[in-house]
Length: 160
Image 1: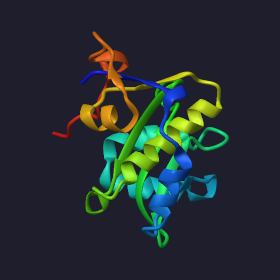
Image 2: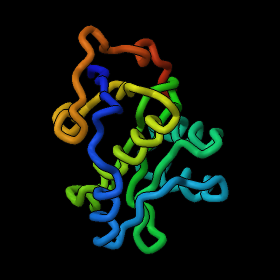
Image 3: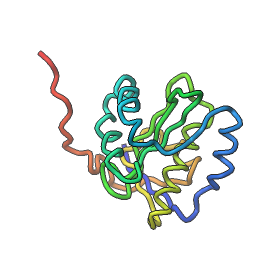
Image 4: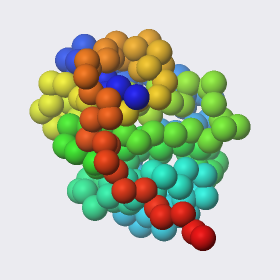
């Protein structure tokens, strides 16, 4: 899976995307430190392989994780600057909440946060859905970037 590059100076508008999502009853917002236990429980019960990265997002000030929340129910998350500086990800949306535009809204919230930090570009590491990122934010694959920083990653040991 390749890494992809995004021009942060050419991002789609964030306010319109957030307003459209808000009309469906979902709020996209930054996670807060007191929410860490609940967010980690949710992530670890659904997206185990990304738990460590989400936890790292809570060590930043401000927290570098955005949430999609509907009536106090977490529907998705997107993090930035956790595995490497200037990297976007991980991001995931609850299976039952997909196809509602939450992924794009979470993506834009995190990328706009990176832009506000002064970055001109963001790297999306180890991309699965290349077309989603291309259509959403004009991301382009980085030639020769697979496996990238994730090469040689130690995964949890299998139990005997």
